[in-house]
Length: 298
Image 1 (tube, rainbow, N blue to C red):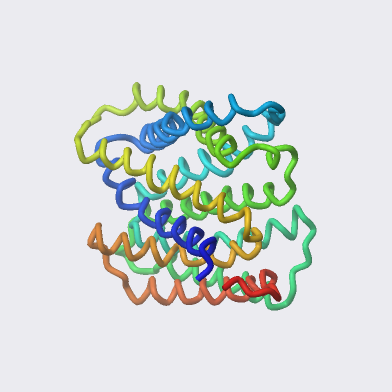
Image 2: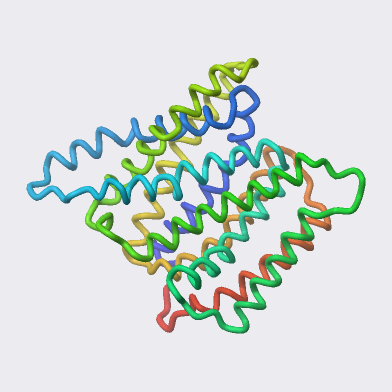
């Protein structure tokens, strides 16, 4: 296997580990605070390396600040924050499978924003994806909790926000001149800054903080592994692999998430979830025809 493909898959596997520690951290702290600490710690760990790199540069690139604020919200803080809220209301397995809808949202936004043509097979893929989401989220049984249904909807909203980030990155406007380390640091740090008002709100409105070693270690793990390490691997691999080709590998993320959620949280995979996942993955396969390339990656 090409080493850059291996790095890409490594990033996806590490992202797949994020759901269990996020749930463990939210047993003690509210979602906004968990996300803030995750981003702030990750930015602080990166800061010395970015400072050293910047001090060695003679021609420092101009930072497109407005663009960076937008990319930070859609690609980091918006996605993490909304996803954490949804994860607090639904199961980890549900969230893992619903994350597979990301390529479907990306395709739809690419058509609307980038004016890309959608083929018949891609429209069919979108339809199958919607069917899969409906199978997972809608249940006529009385045992379904409204909070779980709302949580599933919030998970889908987080995927939509991240799809906006992916589409925006297809039309770079200055951020491509920054190093991967600087770009990652800025998106993480700006994301933490944006969360400060929400964290202050948590301090006044959340009355059962319960700081524990389990929560603190979970946040530390989130900062070091699925944030710093995974983003570094992903960004480095994208230097040698096109974004469209990388998008096809993104479909393995739900698989890693489900495996870690079942293994670490003891959640079960029902036939309803399996059926919905099959529809979503079939839909993704239909949309991914636009990602096919003639050259070999292996």
